[in-house]
Image 1 (tube, rainbow, N blue to C red):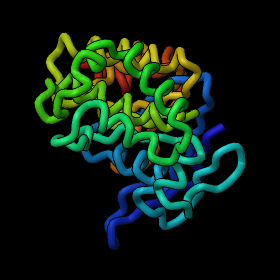
Image 2: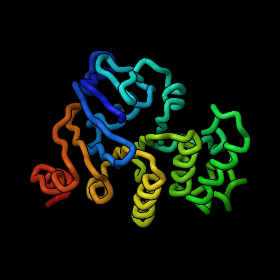
Image 3: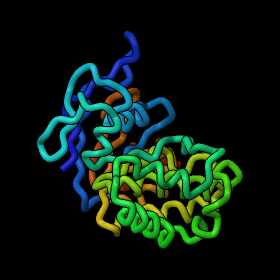
Image 4: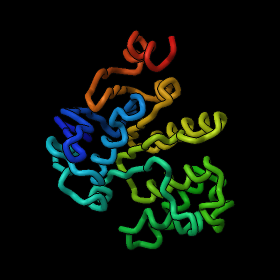
Length: 234
């Protein structure tokens, strides 16, 4: 199980998160919802070891992670698909993917992982020698997800995967998240697209101004008047 307990994060004296506690396991798709500036990205970046916490813990199967460097967190089985994708635009698709397996030495294993990504995203096989910066937004997001999968994660943290994508591509992206989960990987999805996210998640958490405002199963969140009024225009 991946757990966050009583997590508080500050930027200087400005509070970003206060006493946040969430849990997830590999059998789940868990949503983190909220408006822009609610602290969603700060949460996943802290879980990934990129941003330090002022207090609280990030635990994987009971072992603390919050003092590990980000590359060590990846080695423990937690990979981040960052907001904005953060690809190396001048490198090819294949080169970007291989960077995700930087900690692996077995070439045959790296090749097998790369083939798994190509099976999941056939278009990337066709574009494998193309520079990542020349791809469409949806294809770049596929590369970002594929690069994270090259690290053999048990848990995948996805920060705004639908951001900036055309509506028809957004639907494809959420379908891909389900396919990744079906590979046995726990997925934490940070999203402003609440309606679409609630279609695929098992449970969710709602952040407001750095605090946990609401949590529940998909059905409970869909049945919440606060969620419907604030995020679903119902």
